[in-house]
Structure formats: structure tokens, C-alpha cells
Image (cartoon, rainbow, N blue to C red; front, side, top):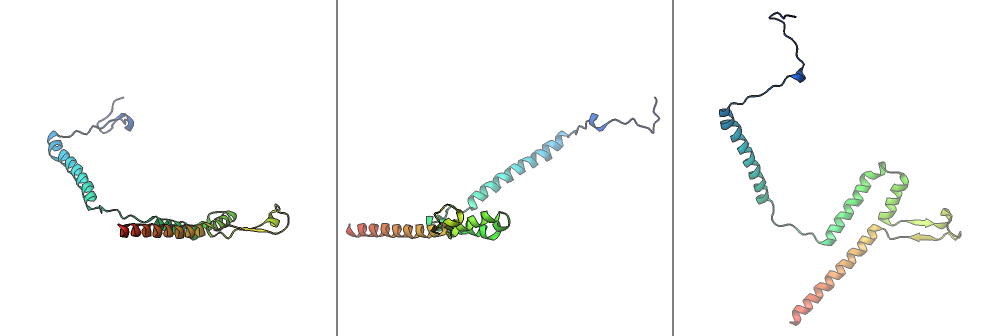
Amino acid sequence: MTSSPGHFLSIPHSQTSQNILLDSSIRDWVVLPLLIIMVFAGLIRHYLSLVLRSSKVKKIPKVEHRIKSTLSRSSRLRSGAAGYIAKHKWQGRIRYWTGEDTVDSTASGTGSGSGSTATTTGYLREEIQWIEEEEERRQEAKRSNDSSSTST
């Protein structure tokens, strides 16, 4: 089969390879300087961010950290969890946070029919108790430090 000058044999694209030839002067005067500039720009950006970052880390007291953590967890639950979890799981979480867990033993079938109820404290109430105890410990430590410094 002879091909006329206007007809080309079609060669599948997967069998052809295209080599990009780069002139050595373009490589030396364009590509390498761009590469060097990009590396130095990245290094400068990194070290500037380290220098401009605040060197002092604000230490939050343990009590404040627990308060913020508890509030954020409860607000996340309050804001969006009701639509995504089953009703009994939702009510279980409410009981966990508020402690309004009154279990009637006659309804569950485990009691003797006396109708006794058991009440738990709830996570939020436990946190408040912990905070009060922690504040008392801090004040006691402060008093002992003050009394030891005045006696010397």
C-alpha cells in the first residue's frame, strides 16, 4: 500500500512518545534560577512564620480548660446531634450531661414493685463539684504559701 502525499498512516497515541528537548542555555538561565528562587521563598516563608509567631504560649489554668471543654462538648451535642442519632441514644446523652436519670424499678421489671428511684449526679454537676474542690485546694495552697513566707 502506497500512501499519497496527503494521506498519513495513523499510529496509535500509546505507541508514540514525545520527548521535550530543553536547550541547555534555557535550562541554565531560566529553569534552575526559578527552582532556586522557589526553594528560597519556601524557606523564607517558613522561618518568617516561626519568627512572627508568638513565642509565649498562654497557659490556661486546668479549671478553665475543663470548663471550656465541657461547654463545647455540651453545645455540640445540643446544636446538632438530635437529628442524627436515635431517640434513646439522645435521651441517654441528656441523662449523662444533666443527671436527670430517674429510673423506676417497677417499669423496668427488675424491682420488687416498690417504685424506688435512683438519681445520679450528672457530668455537669460533677464538673461543678470538681471545680469547687479544685478552687478550695488552690486557696489552701495559697494560704499555706502565704503563712510560710510570713513566718520566715
